[in-house]
Image (cartoon, rainbow, N blue to C red; front, side, top):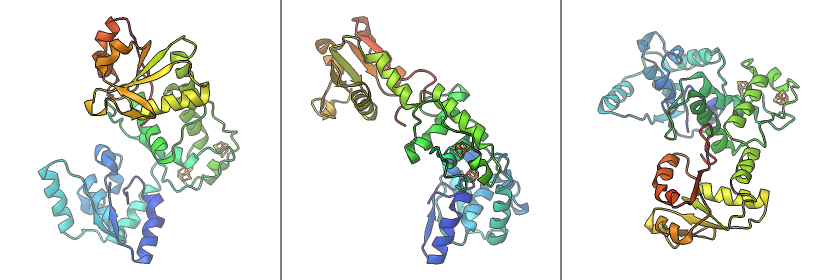
Length: 332
Ligand code: SF4
Ligand code: SF4
């Protein structure tokens, strides 16, 4: 199981149950996928007098301190880090593990603004997944991380970190940027950390709006790009999760298109195959097929693909990007 300072509150009942049942536990992500190592000052509360101010050591020892944990899988990026981890786990913890566990859990609950993922706030009458949103928002407490081939601006990097777990773990995407919160206060009354959930929910919907991360924004984008344009052929490049969602959403939300879909991919192994029932073509066939528009669907490599299509743009074929600069991807 994934277990670290980031989700320790949420995972305690699981570890306790595993211990009671005598089930072995292997811990992955003891450094929270790098977040803890990148934010050592923030997590320095985990250090006890025996950790010499080394947050990474304290975090690794904490992951092993629960009696249910048998194995800790710590990632390393160099021989030095490997040797450091081996030395750390080859020696007994200088602080009694039980005392370490209690001390860190106490400090964790005092972290300002940090959602422990305890889920006490669940049960919103409007169906808002408050605990999932609040837990995902922990990323806003840390430095932004470059991802998806994006290095700036910080607001976009934060939005990527915020919406990715909501998409992956919960398949949550709001209907629109308008928050359905009626400010009944139920969630805040239940919150063990006294967090400002109502404002956080409002901000999350606001961010979803600006990041194009709503069902309404997706449909609007498809209308803008493809609907009522008298197109005969619409090309999607490349085929994959993005092309699937585009075709499915267009047909379910806008209607049966009065144009034909055509897919392009630079991978020769895919040419001639079908994806979602649509034939995949080589980019070399673009002049012959002569689509009215090619939509660049990828997020991470959108600019590269757009540039690679310059010869076809020069021939007068319209090429557009699915994503705007402030968007998070339609598919994470
Ligand atoms: S205040 Fe808003 S988010 Fe919280 S429970 Fe009430 S409706 Fe849901
Ligand atoms: S009750 Fe508070 S700390 Fe617990 S999951 Fe909800 S927001 Fe997070």
